[in-house]
Amino acid sequence: MALERQRPLAAAVGSLVLVAATLWPVARDPREDGFPLSTYPMFATARPTTLVMSYPLGETAHGNVALLPRLIGSPEVLQARAIVERAVAGGRNGMAQLCGRIAERVALEEQFRDVTGIRIVSGTHDAIEFLVRDQRGPERLLARCEVRR
Amino acid sequence: MNRLADWWFAPAPAERLAMLRIAIGLYALLWVVGRIPELHELAALPADHFRPVGVVRLVGGPLAPGLVVAIAAATAALLAAFVAGVAFRVVAPLAALGLLWTLTYRNAWGMVFHTENLLVMHVIALAVTPAADVWALGKRRDPAAAGYGWAIRLLIAIAAVTYVLAGVAKLRLAGADWLDGEFLRNQIAIDNLRKALLGDRVAALATLFLEQPAVLTLFCVLTLVVELGAPIALLGGRVGRVWAFGAWGFHLAVVLTMNIWFPYPLFGFAFLPLFPVERVGQWVIDRIRAIGSRLRS
Image (cartoon, rainbow over all chains, first blue to last red; front, side, top):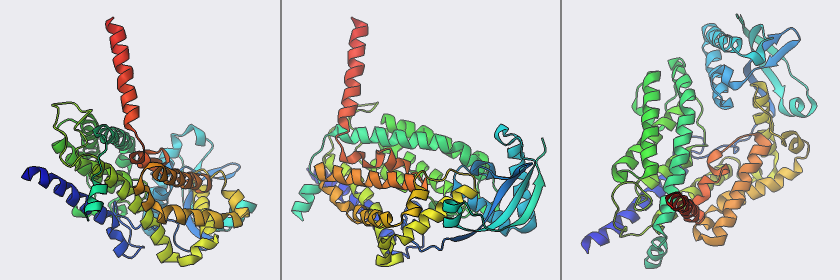
């Protein structure tokens, strides 16, 4: 009988602990994210439509083309972006290493057989102009390497 | 207090909780197996890319790629046993711990995703419930003294809290301004631009909504209604299921406008505790029995 009473008590305590733990991030600054206990700040912050971002491009005889996140190092686009940012923060060496790794992956891709070089650039674009009116902003070259096959 | 306890512990079939263990466990298993190549690539990144979060803060630096993959493989094996319900009281906490570690490690490389949080919390919750009393391999167990309804309500409550937190974050960071649509329009624009620059697909309806920002105001209002209204899911029944469809619609809209996939809710797993899922399991068992008896005769 005593054991039967303890079991619902354990279930009630376990439930309270798990719900409270999931709710606990509400006590934090919403910008202080974590995993798996998150404040879920996605889509919540104000953003200007101008974006300054570094990214790799593939050089072809007909101009530069966008590559794929997995060729940068992760199939997740945000992770790929973080990889580029970290490499750029690492200066010339960091960018050269990343450029080399991307070039090695591109060399194995049939889809990108016309890509002869990789450029890591920093671009400044207005998101609405870019997406709605196809207007690209200026791009500055940060690093370049050959694709060897 | 008694009424609250009566409601929380209101009975539910053991088979429903068991089916949730099987479905959510199977999803977690497939998710971990599918992440292994990515985990290997991430683990091979230079150490300065490592930004530990959560339990991964316990280690001073990145682990060897082989060890990362070995932990993920062990987690997959434990999750397989979790699904089967084998030695559940021992296996389930270990599987939950393995999943927590593996997915936290994935989030420790500069970008914290929000696609796996609820999955991890659901598996942790299932691990402390009597989710393998039926439809499990091994010896048959006595019915749980506290019943099974509380465990299902716990899964719903955890899901509801995550949605409420997302709504609260919007109000705390942006206030009522978030409702005017401009915040969301800029989010859609910037997110899709990043995708375009990194070679990912731009969302199907992104440019349409960027040209018609007024529609986004309605979307913002509905988003906050779904997020802050999530606790109504705890009422269960038709009300809970209507909320689930609303939340699912929100995730669908996120795919169509930002090409951001939250597979756990999008494929319905996050909302399964709101449905009589045991009927699916029973249907499968009946089919297997029918085929078995046909083969024997």
